[in-house]
Length: 205
Length: 96
Image (cartoon, rainbow over all chains, first blue to last red; front, side, top):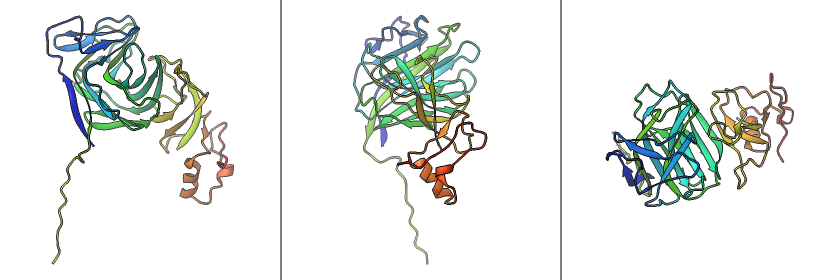
């Protein structure tokens, strides 16, 4: 299957205290805002932040991606990524993939309780990283990617459908400049078999 | 390999429910949770690379294909008496 893009947000717009009408914050989590054409936390009250896109709800087999423009390596513990199959506000249930400085992990939120399902080593490049992190949910399979290269995968059958969105965590001592995101995209999958591979047949003589 | 290990954590983003494994271990875990997100069990099954040592409080999971795969690799291994050197409480029994 190939990714079929249903929505993109390059975050190129005027500074705003809100991400926009198509984004929904969650009670008990920090919201995002637009600053210099990037998404940054509007506050660090709850440490964990998330917002979901409320437009097109993709098919159950879905994906989401975001570019991590900057992830601090010199301050508090932080991570950032995307969510899929996420419930509407303010129920925090769904899957997420996030990058932190030594690994990438897939997790499951269930009514706000967080379970780590899989983890793989990953060395985040120096700042600004500008890495694309994405999560695909196909059936019960969950697969996390960095720049479209598979890094971590697992299976879980708890959550079948929902929204896509962004997530981050900034621990005590961190600042709103420690996580900067842009270029969100989401969608479902086409049934086309890609990548198209050429088969070269030869006949010997 | 598949290993059964305790579940640790408090369920927050900073301290998620997760398998008790040495820091830096790559894993895929199976941690069933209830509607409140709390783990149903105290232990979980994890898949870790074969070249990793079995955690000290881990236990080779013996009721799934993991044990059979061990036997397929070396038929001389008696999976009913499997012991792993250096692991305190590791044993495996043939699955039913």
